[in-house]
Image (cartoon, rainbow, N blue to C red; front, side, top):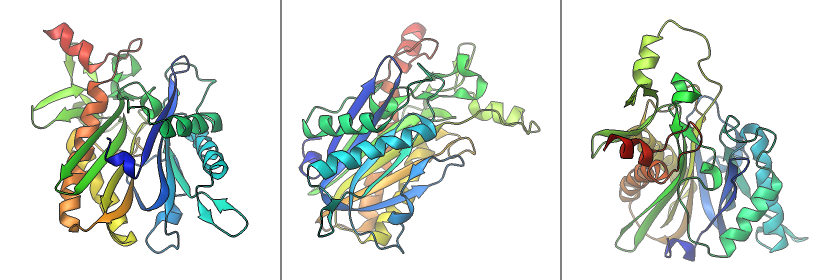
Length: 319
């Protein structure tokens, strides 16, 4: 992600005891931001300001955190860090950092009494500016992530956070995604399920379970979510950035089965550095693929935690 770091800083804070964390994506010079929320159970902060009809021109940070609604306070720490370092919108009497965010439900893993808070966001910013290498799997917002929870937590598997950067000429698109889906993770190229709801030795049962329970109107599960951020050096107006955020969900739909359920809070942000002229279609193609591959990366790099079996350990047992 070296080229990406010219315009964006990405950092984690991970609490391995509590099994929760925070990931920040920072744009020191500001970036044009957009967002699209498709899940039925979102937890978000300050997303209205990113809508095309509203006046916010630049975004300085995106916070992805665990902790469900409690975790939204991680953005407070991001705002505090950026203000201390004079990063934000100059309002004459100081700077106001524009920070939006989303959180995922990870309260069923680790310690329920410790949630991502402002200190998590602040420490993730410190990590971002120390230029530490990006770590995938059980880190940051992906620390307590799980997938395939519809058949009970004892039959779920470990999710995580992943990334993918794709370059095409002078253009790059990079995605960071925390994978915490109700559904299963599917690799369309290998045509296999990587992780998801388990039924004995079989994985990838979520869609079948939903269909088998088609007359069960109870809430089957309390919440999950895929949240992420796409970064690009492309030059796009705000309306197109929001459209790109919308299209980025196609990457989720290609990798998660089923995607965008009423139990998920799927939310994708986009940040554009406005450095390279490119057609919207070209950026869209790269974006969808980057999101898809970032989801696969998050699951492939995850480590087993308790009963939450990882992709690596599941396939090691099968071989």
